[in-house]
Image (cartoon, rainbow, N blue to C red; front, side, top):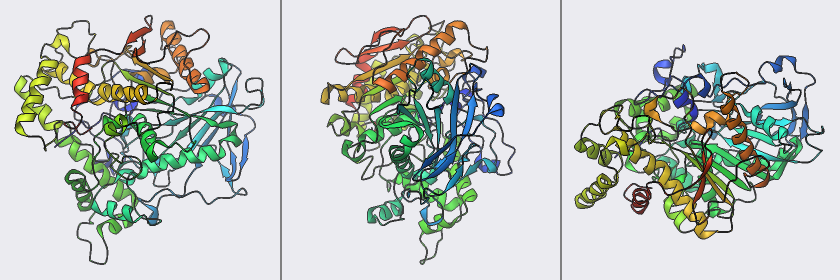
Length: 615
């Protein structure tokens, strides 16, 4: 049984070519993909040139913030347009998860108010493939001691802030649960600047969390320790608990940085969006007042399989990892899990990445080895079931989105016949517990709903609709994949909100604008919206129309963070999703309201067969 592999990847996976890292460990740490990611040009790189990079050299007095967790010295930024910001890098929100704390629930930092932190340089990212996202990291750029957050704020006390506490945009990065970090490659300063120009200033917090097997290790031994619940023992979904601890730290301390702890909005794309959806399900939907709203871009909790830690597939990944780091034959006095704790971080990271590489290289698509698992806090049952039963934070206003062609980057390019399409679909998606008759019935219906004519497939708006691009079944597979793992989960979640809490503000958008340079065969692929959201409008590479589109898009999301409503002066009218299922289509020169009813019969069928697809 295999499942789609990189559906929650961060923007850099699609935007930047994978390049070899010079590190001697590259044989194990380099990332592989089933096929080359789309090369969508320099304007779509996550390593977006930020308008503040040159200004750093001209920074003036360094800001200092005093909190009960210590004093933090940041960097003052003078922007070219005369405005200024403060950036605080690498603020620890938990103890280093090393030694006995590897795999454990994050522990609160033990610093005091007298502790002084120099936060003027970016911190190390969590262990991951060194070339993940096309960034040429070395071992000096990653660490197991990586539970930090960065804070970006306008300078407080000037006319832009009026001395008021500011709403908070808390960003959870994507990256397939194996890569990514807080930045500074992501252009957060541009969002802060937009908020200041709109006279609705905000603070941005970007967090890091454990990745790969460090953060999402499964297996029977992990579950056994987790069930004991003893302090310092392993916990399922450690990476999600890291996020929760970071959110709690922000709730406790962001006031000292000028942020309003009662006005925190979680924002995330892909794996970050899936994570946010899981936070909405966590603790039975009790947010504990830690945040008040959420923006989820391309991904919900039921976009990934929810498996038990001891399931054969997950246990297989645990065993594979143990074998690769020489822990399989632990003595009776040392469990395999204890051995995994004792392995040095580089060796463990190489093993984690090798398990990922093995799956991603040797099968066309596969169950990603390190994903959120069933537990007793975040994923207590199938997410689709929890949404249907109203067991989520339905009172939280949300803004949810997808890209027009979510599936194009994730499907095989060699499917030529219906028989090959059926084999791919049944092998990758259908539960092995289904009877043969049931599987055949589902395949038959999907063949009806997703015909083999390339004109009906994804990308949906190419110049030549009949062009199959790759093999004859490529567009058909891309259409099904995008619907099964993005559109159907999103539509199912939005239906749950409008059903269980119709008074809650729910907004949605569909971006139909391809980033400049995107190959035609990808249409408007996964992460297209973040390409614009974090694009550098000062680079001269965007057209005037694109710059206007970017500025409006940023202003809309800032408006939601500030007032729980993406409408505002000079912005396109954006209705509530509601019973009419209205969403905003984002496109240069053609931003308009559309109904969320595309491929309605097909997506409704996928939702109705949730158990068949293990969602």
